Image (cartoon, rainbow, N blue to C red; front, side, top):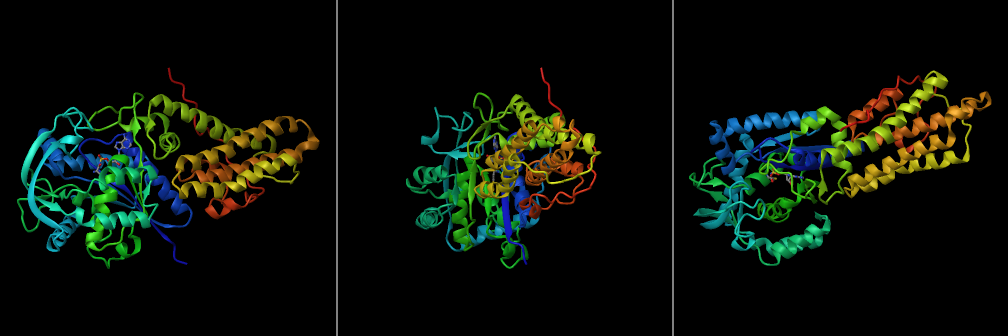
Length: 511
Ligand code: MSP
């Protein structure tokens, strides 16, 4: 039977400076969802990439004395290395400087122009260079950019515009018919109240003030300005405008565009309208997540420069500690504080104590009492039932949480079962059973139940902390590692010999 497809994207990041933990946050979540979908049997296409054109990059490159392409190439090499270190399993990395993308953008622009959705006019506006954003007078805060607080400059130039207003009613109608298109729901109301109800303004889609961009094919002093170039990445990577390309037919429409809250607007207004104008089906869902902020609430941002290279955290605490923190700490959709101290605490409590300790002591006891051989004489007691039932209920609970993108809650469910395993050890006291020869079979049953629960939890943890999950399954020496084995308790093979226990997470002690 053919697998069902699942297409998930991250935003394409601006390579204006090296990436920080905020970019990692989006990408780790997308990776976890992609891995979960693969685990559960989908044919996944997971895309990330970079948004490389624009005045800011042109300026940065000239300051650095290199060409814009040289400038971005270096940052992209670095970003790809970062994604590798974070075990990000993207299927495709799109760059807006890819030749196929640039040609597709020119065709899209021309089609919209030919059918009258793009027209030539004059652009007057207030522009913030570091944020690459245009603002209206009323959006400024104390006369400055509302995002970064810096000066904005007035610009006036001939430009092309995209008729968003023409599609406004169709967009609202689409929202009504697709109540889950924008999540969380609060963001949908924000779009309707702040942007759509006041009336959509036509969007400026070209520039003549800089040259680092895709030239408008029929008027080459213009370059295509940001959003038409950037947003179309989600289809150009699939071969669009060739709507008959294999990838386009198979993967479009996207199932989830995962984006930060400040760019929900572009993905839920401009992007659907672009697609409507092109006659292409709309994506199924746009999910707007919150930001990672510093303790005082300040957003971690390239323009603020308030961050470390994420590799420093990976080197100090391990890749899964960083992944786990990003996935577990923040309620998805809300902002969350990122500090190194919180990362350490979270690693210690959940990964070193709850998970690491459990695996270590269970495997150690199995070695100590049974030479590491897995046995199950089935000497059950009533309290086994609770552990077994909560382990068996886990698959469905995780599925329900993941389907509504409550990734942190899915992880909490798994951690709850691991905590139950720890409690089960405290209640059954294997070290006491071990002293009594007549309790040997009970002891073996107790250890079996924990090992089996650990096996199932490890498989379910694999989308989130893949390296650790693999290490645990390796220590268990089991071949029962596929998703379909998590619905049965008792599949861990009998008479196999466990590998030696290895510490998964050493407790981090920091002054
Ligand atoms: N290039 C555009 C996106 C185009 S998508 C067609 C862009 N790039 S960006 O590099 O500025 O930001 C990319 C993503 O990173 C956004 O979704 C943004 O929310 C996310 N993050 C940037 N800083 C962040 C935090 N501090 N925390 C969480 N996510 C953050 O916008």
